[in-house]
Image (cartoon, rainbow, N blue to C red; front, top):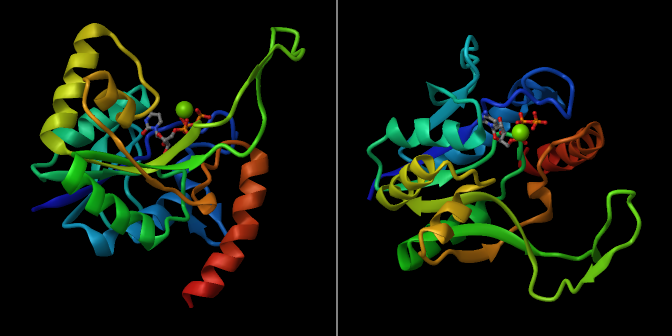
Length: 218
Ligand code: CTP
Ligand code: MG
């Protein structure tokens, strides 16, 4: 069984405001470099979707693929560039990836066909009106926050992507496309360290986390 890691890294990082986000360093290593290095020991190949005009830095292991205008388009370009049986899709923007999560996903994808890291929601949830006033309380029981990595049989995910493309359907992640195709997705325990670096505040958290993470690795 051939496994490929697919890393969408072609975003522009608008909310962070420091240029293409995958290339932003945290404690001396880029988000992309950290994500790719975490996956490399566990897969047969690593493919990385990049923005037009940017090359893979020499210290990032993997093969570059031209990304698209949306995350969904970037993932489809990656899917079309590999013949692996199983794909592990992981956002470049989540640089701290525990090995345990990778192992759990590779077990679950063999049993179920699709699996994602996810965490139970801990905060109280409300749907607010436009003014930002308290609207409807949404019980958090049974609600999960979905992370990456996510693992799939490549053939099933390509079919789900092509169906979504034909219908003009936009999804925020790949597990959502498999669910839309009527197929099951297993939830495996995610990890708080899998935070997605989205805003300047997230970058501060990531810098603090990197010091602990790098000290544990050395
Ligand atoms: N991504 C991608 N291709 C795109 C858009 C996003 O490969 N056209 C990737 C990003 O590089 C990131 C992941 O998808 O690793 C999650 O996207 P997000 O956190 O939204 O990153 P950006 O789109 O770069 O950030 P923003 O939305 O703030 O511009
Ligand atoms: Mg985005």
